[in-house]
Image (cartoon, rainbow, N blue to C red; front, side, top):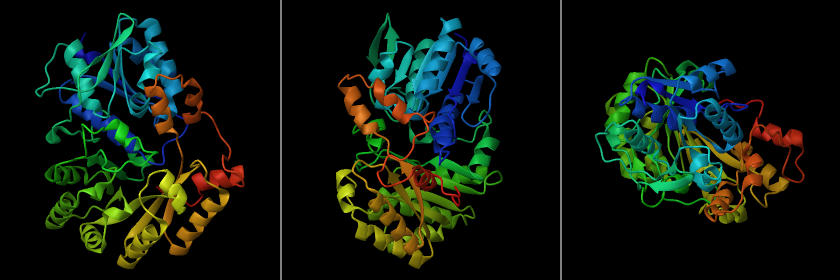
Length: 419
C-alpha cells in the first residue's frame, strides 16, 4: 500500500456543532500528528464543506486507506460511506475512530465493515499503530493503543493503552484542513486541546470512556501552548483552550497563566472547567493572563438532578462562583443540559430565570444517552434502536412535558446566541 493513498474523512452532518472543537481537535489534531510521518494525505471535512458526491467518489477510488472519524450524530451516514467505499474498493482498508467508536465498539464490529476500530481516545496513537502494521513503516515511539483488526471475519484485539508523548500532541493548524471554514463557523476562534481525561465522573460524559483509568488526566506542555499561540496570532483573533476540566490541575493552570503574563499575551482566551476547581485568587490570575470567558458545566440548578447525574456540586455553590465572576469582571457562561431524565419544564425555566437574574450567558445542549449506550454495548446487547436517537437527521420536538417544540428549539438555538 502506498502512503500517498491516505484519505481522512469527516462525514456530512446536518448542521455545525455549537462548538467546532471536534474539527480542530479530534479531526485536525489527529491529522496533524499523522501528517508528520505520512506526507501525501488528503482531507475531506464534509461537515463544514459542501463536497459533491463526485469528489467523494473520486477520492474513494484513489485511496487505499480511508480514515474516518465517527461521532454519535453521523453514524448512519458513516456506515453508508463505508459501504460505498468497500463496494468498489474491496482491497482498500478503513480505519475508524471517534467518540461513537469508543462508546459502542461492539455495535460497529457487528457491521463487519471496518478493517480497524480504534477503541479509545488516543486516536493518533491507534492510527499510527495500524499504519505501522499495514504500511510497513516505523513510528519513533513505542505505539500502544487498543484497537481491533478484522481478520477472517472476526475482530481481534490488539495493543494496550498508551498516551502520545506530550511533545507529539497535534495542532489543528494544518494546511490540509479547511481552516477558513473553521474560522468562519467559529467566529475567528481557534481551538486547542490542552487537557484530556478527567478526575470526575459525571454520568452523561464520554471522557471516562475515551480516556479510562489507565490513561488518566493529561495536560499539554505549557511552552508548546505559548509557541502555538504565537504561530496562530495573525490568523485567529482568540483561542479556546479545549479541556474537560482545565483547572483541575491548579499548579499547571497557574504556570500557564504566569507564562502568558510574562510573554505579554494579547490574544484573548477562553476555556471550560467546574465551579469547584476555581477560586478568587485563581480567577484573578486567569483574567490577568487574558481570560475572556470561562464556561462552567452547570447542567441544571436542580440539586436532585445534579445528584442523579453524579455532578458532585450544588446549586448554591454554582451561584456563588457565578457571582464571583461578575464581581471580578469575568464573563462566565453556563453550559446546561436539556432533556436530563426526570427533568421538568419548571426545572428548565427556573434555571433560565436564575441565570438571567445573574446576567450570565448560557447555552443548552441536548442530553445524549451515551453512557446508557456504552453500558448496553459492553454487555453485547443490540443497541440498533438507539442509533436514531443520536442522529442529527432526525428533527425531534420537545422531549420535556410542558415545553412546546418552539420553546424547546429556542432554548437550543436562541436567536441572540453567539458562539
